[in-house]
Image (cartoon, rainbow, N blue to C red; front, side, top):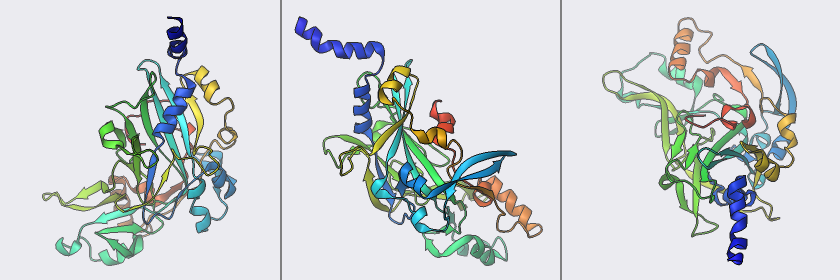
Length: 358
């Protein structure tokens, strides 16, 4: 009887006082995702240290106020834009929900640069001409040298320095195992949401018997999806027929290199770092005795902030029509604003529940 009490006492204390820090670390390690990149991806994940090495502090004005942020030392340098896959880490924010008895493990990924957007266009040979200057127009906004199944990469449109993306794994605070119904939240652009375990778990490469979370990142924009595919959003359809004329594309269809954040670096240090714990001060002190210095030092945008004109803005009538169309499809900011991201700890979802897109 005494030996049974000695064996069970640690778990009982953990259950009474809150999540066991060691069990939380085990869950973080177990469900650290395998991130799969597009085969044509040029803008790779990196670490905070590597990003800070290629950026410099800057001052920018937003909403009439001055802010202090970061920007690349040389925006045109592909070495600075390209990230560093070999040193990339995932940064973990642990959110404790005592009412439901669950933990949300947010895995954040940092990229040095978010590349141009991709747009889908219908085969206009089979659609009545919508404007006499269509060819001239497309040359101004599309990289027409790269047609791939009616998709075109835009010319420096939708780009911005810095890119924080994330997914969230929900586990039981009692045993650290993933929940089955709302298991993983993926930050797909325009439509992020919770997915059941059956749709996101697959056999891992480090442990063939383990269930692992795989996430497929879209080319340039790094939105996350549970499967490799081409995802269309903000589509404009032809009245009456429903035929899609054009829309924005998250292209995760071409599988390239991957990084397993559950596999240690060569020096056996983990590829993940805890940089936030919400909802439990005891757990926070146990998991993160010292807050990373970069959280307080760089609280504003991780990338330059600037406005610019859309391609037809200086042309009478067409400029206004183009602006209205871009607003209708939700792409106006993609064309007229270059804004580095606010860091994760400045976003609502840092502490609040996640319910939709990011």
